Length: 283
Image 1 (cartoon, one colour):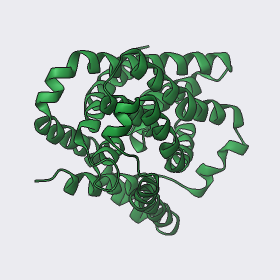
Image 2 (cartoon, helix red, strand yellow):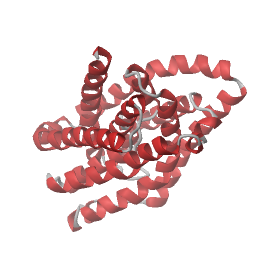
Image 3 (tube, helix red, strand yellow):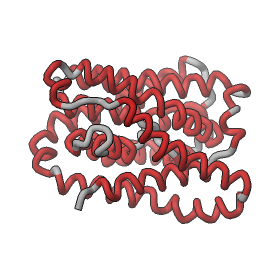
């Protein structure tokens, strides 16, 4: 069975569930709390991709893994980050706003960052695969923007129905991600095992450096404690399902090997951020 048969529907379902949790007002909080929102977006859209590019270069990753690592940094965390912010006693309203804004903005920034990654991967990388920017934009709009808008509209016109659907879908998000990771792990287990040392270190380093830099940004800009916790989670938590979908889509890269960093990241992200949440809750 081709994994893409379940990857793309699962991504659309997760994006629809994200839309169910959003309101139109979530997109305008930037006018009321510009500093916190600006710091969060800076961390997600600029700092994290820069960290990924630097680490991919420092670790001398092969071209496909190079692009795969950067791809993770391009995909914002979705509704799962809102749940983690709540568990960490963070600022849930800020988390929802950052999720809403980054989910829309990255529809258009992902092709730009990936084009840079393909160039930095070297001549060999450019010969090994091609980035169809137009196809990527169309796929992002169809599989992400449309489901988010449908969920947003349902939440606006029938909030009670949206809440009931969200209660079901939100429980499926984590198992769906683990299912995707499991399928791709089985399919590419030889490559994963052969490269787990170098690639595992690169993925873990990206996660830890991103969290550290996000915390420093939040402190330097004098954000509140709850805002700092949310910024750390929003920058550290990325949408592995989206990265897997872009990597394996027949309309974009059509190469499951590019998804391998996202598979490793899906596992490490939950270990590191759940530990972070546990420490905060203990305090």
